[in-house]
Image (cartoon, rainbow, N blue to C red; front, side):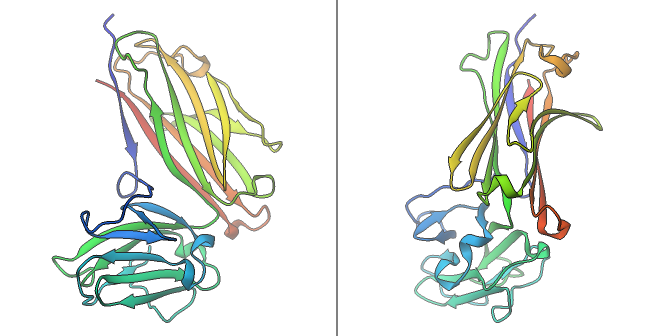
Length: 272
């Protein structure tokens, strides 16, 4: 049997999500800025962190004058800078800049992807566009896999990581955290968190690591021998090594459905 090399693909709404503080442009063009740090396209912002004008998320295009630029909501409508709960301030020069912040609280319809266009509106053919995700309660910031250093040796062991961000009171508001194995239309639960906040997995090894400030890393380590995953429910024939895993997060008030959020993210571990 010849070993199959593993590669990975992610299932994302817009692009691979990256949240990183870095030295600010101008070299990289349009960017997001919050609390003195710069962020790249597809970054996540917890709604509690952008309440009030002094905590706004700014969309900036260096050395460009504003000419009708805008933020567009997750529903596709332009943000009206004078209405609640979303507010914004416009700066024309020396750098085109539109800040976005929350006055009060946002509803479920405000949760999701936002688009900023500079220096013109989003209908402009040559405008610059960047995306930010403004979320309520909690979000799955990243989902990754640690592949073995030597991908030619079998069996191969790899670890999946799902990073949860947002609200830090798990004891009161965490409803569910689960890893699933996806096969066609079937989902098989692999890991879950109980009401006692105990994280356990039915295959391989799982750990929940508290990184502080609402960030948790939920891991799942599985073993694959080239054709068959050798752990429990995943022991099935698979000739090409293609496997799909899904991370599920359910967070919010116990008694008010409208005040909860459900998040799902897939990761494809693919043999070539």
